[in-house]
Every structure is written in C-alpha cells, then in structure tokens.
Length: 136
Image (cartoon, rainbow, N blue to C red; front, side, top):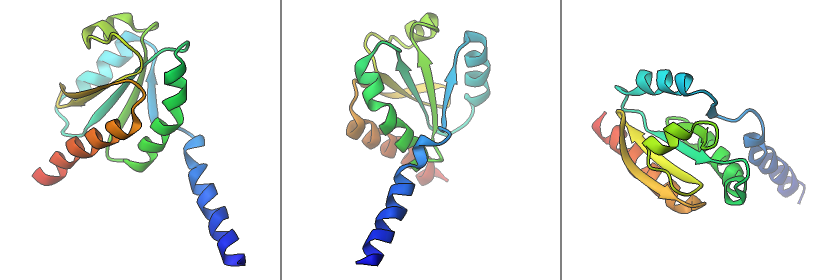
C-alpha cells in the first residue's frame, strides 16, 4: 500500500507540472506577434494559437487543459492572444467566438477549433503534428 501512495504522490507532482512555468507564449503587442509569426512561417512545426479574453469563462476553464497539452506536446508551439489586446490579429484570423484555437503550419491555417473542446483540440493537434513526423 505504501508503494501505491508513493506512486500517487509522483503522479500528483507530475500533474502539477503544468502549474509551473507555462509553455504557452503570450503576445501583448502586434509587432511582437508579427515578428514571431514571420520567424516561424517556414517551420514545419505546428503552432496552436489560443484566441482568448480575460472576461471569457470558457477560456479560463480550458486554460489548465491547454497548459497540460503544451507540456505533453513539446514539439508543438502554443501561443495565446487576447482578442481585446490584439483586435487586428483576431480579425485577421476571423475569430468570432472565444476560445478559438487556430492551428498553423508553415504560416497557413490548417485547422480550427471553436469553443472549449479539449478532446477535439487534442485530436487535431495529433493529426497535424503527425504529418510533420510522417514526412521527416
């Protein structure tokens, strides 16, 4: 029984890992976002953009799951953009509801998930990150 508890402690400390420094990059200026986006355009690495808002309940609800996905899929880049801070970026990606997750590869949108749908988001991450692994 002691080993069960030590396993539980190990699991809980791992589960707590995403509460440490997040792998989700937050952009607060359009120029910083543009520079980052342009630098990543030629990369085959999948980028997941989380369009969020501070007042959005579902956005706050899915944040821990997003941190968990970012910790799990270290070969995928996760970015957070507040639609109220970077209105023009949200408009460029035709964001109409929050949260909206836009999946980008080589500067192009390859998929989108609207709503706090962790399972659907993870399926699409697996689908599109797998393409890079299959080509490599």
